[in-house]
Length: 390
Image (cartoon, rainbow, N blue to C red; front, side, top):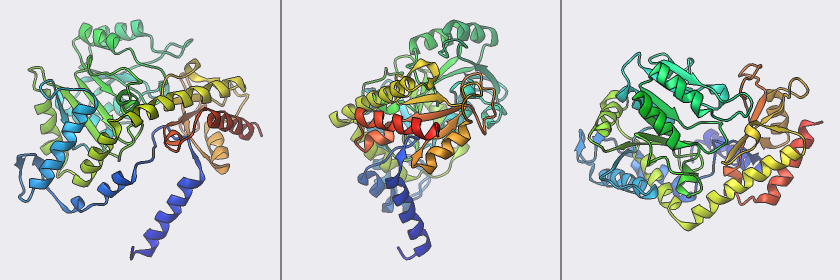
């Protein structure tokens, strides 16, 4: 690379990534093939529109790229093209979620999602997000005692508030979601059911987490977490006569975005193919094994695990412990100084600021990609314990 400054910074980041234990739940390591697609000549092509319906010429090849990504997305999750449509153009998860609301929820309508400190995402209707400014947020919480979703309470809120859309899927909730109950709740109040599987999409692909597709109207996901692809997103919409996919396609373009990033779409296609094989299923299974061992060992060492444990790729640890421990920011800083990368995270009914909350969020997808196993997780847990108790 002729630009020595950027080249030097890239090398510094490569060195940093290799030198640390990465427990960021929303990060992973892509293959060399994904990187090659991202850095390919597809970067040079601009083409607003959809395959066969572009506003630009010279799109014969990129049309094939986009159609292949769509085909692979449907195949990976066992979906028929007659039953589901998928838009592969969203640039990331937040724009994808915004597009769904803009397509299906009138301005001022109600979005029902989990409160941020309880495990929800900013784009699930939080007041600080544009999704909580353009639309009216209806937030649900976990049970105070179990820290798990109380479906009866959720149903009561939904029937009272009558949201336009209910969002299931989370950024820090560690247990398997009962999609059937969410479907029943959505039907009881006449809402769309959108499932954001961004965090657990790779586990669904690996057949280690239940599929949301039998129950959802819309499924959104990023592609860079457990799915182990580039930073991008997918929107799946059910084909059932309501023409949801047409509304969503029009919202993506011309509503929110211009020309697709074809290099990104190609990289997604590569990752989807990689995820559709026996090696990936083994990988997904190992992620869950690793997370459970990490959780169990930290618990054995005296740390309180939010929700009492985990069934997925992530967990949250209460490091504040009612003032007997340390704040989440200090804990994250101490771990980073020792070469372990995590993020501070709120916990349910947190009494501390989101900028310095009571908890940490840990995830094992990235380290599992590196080949870490249960024995490694025990060592990592003990190292975390020693660092935080200094």
